[in-house]
Length: 460
Image (spheres, helix red, strand yellow):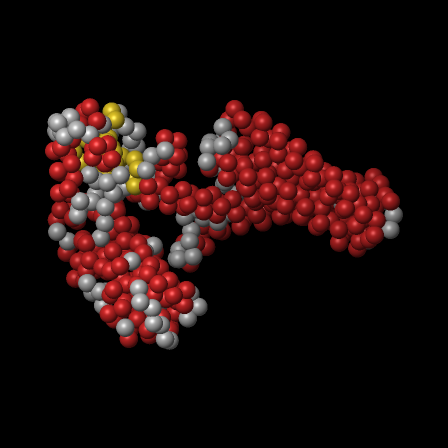
């Protein structure tokens, strides 16, 4: 492969695109052009991480081994933990420990959390005791909690400082802390007393005390706070980060804006997985046995619900025998249309709940609006379905049956798609919890059963 690009960023973009379709060629190119690879890794670790994620673990490990510790650690900071751990497992313990020590503490903890216990203990044993203690403290928190999301690399100032002293202190911390969007002010017990932005410090008169510049009683979260609540607070108050404090108010760390954004994305993907009946924590990298165990309970629930639908159809078998294959062929159309209408409402409601757009006081209005949409859409769809029934069935009664059943299932599907997540939330459950499975049950029963009942009255 011939690549002749002058700047690392342009090279990275070309390599990233090529790696998605021809990873072997990218591996060969980087092996043969070590100087360019090192320049790329140093200039843009994010792009370098994207490239390594497209390669197999052995190739990524070899390329990471060509870099100095600082650049390699920078790339691991940007890699997804479930992929970065595959790279770490190919390195010797000494190199692994050096990389972990050079990484951001929160990212290093995420990576160590992916290692098996024996390997994790080996790495921690080789680290400086202070670093090891910090990482162990982070590993105690659940990954989807504020403690699991936070970084301990936080700019901290003492409450008695002046703005001039604070600015000088931040100059000293510049190389140690990446995020200076917020600077937290603590007392002698490290209890959080305020927060000040870097901008306010820069423009404040040097002799002004921090207590005059800072915002008192800042919004803070506990380590056990769920990431969904963290994201909600950040969004509600327009914050780029949230301090994390213990039960005594002692500052432990900060959930950065980047972590908040990632948590929102993760929460959305979990809601989608839960709605489909998959494990909310499952990814394509989840071990097979664990993933199968997550899915099996909902598969069994789905089977039970399918048997209920089968029972409904079996009870109306005489109608199917009398009318014949045309009725059997058109029944799924009614069920599918109701399912589609319900899925649309379900998606809108769950998404709105995720961004706090559906409060309990608004639930009735939301339900009415969605049902109104279902009624409006059901009229043209019902007329078209009736026309199809006339063509296939050859009688007006068949057309009316098809139209009525379609209209009814569209409206009920919309009602179910809106009502199921609202009901689950009222019961204190996750609104996304297998909502799609319950929706399918409702629309299938109404679609098949309702169609057969109307057919009994009008056709048989």
